[in-house]
Image (cartoon, rainbow, N blue to C red; front, side, top):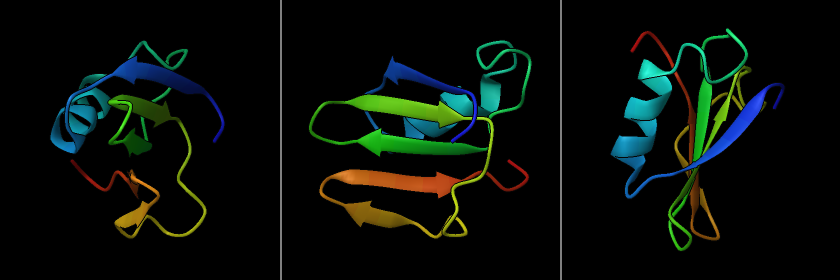
Length: 70
């Protein structure tokens, strides 16, 4: 992950919405990927795609995906 930001979110949907609406929060770069930690309710935003191609994954309560035209 290149430029990243961690913020509070209560669901994957909210995390994805934050990514979609984020224009200045990653030093002017568009948000390209999100990771959501279910147990801690934390959302990580990234200005680069996640390496695995962005298929919806769930590893130890962390769900992550790449943003594609949303």
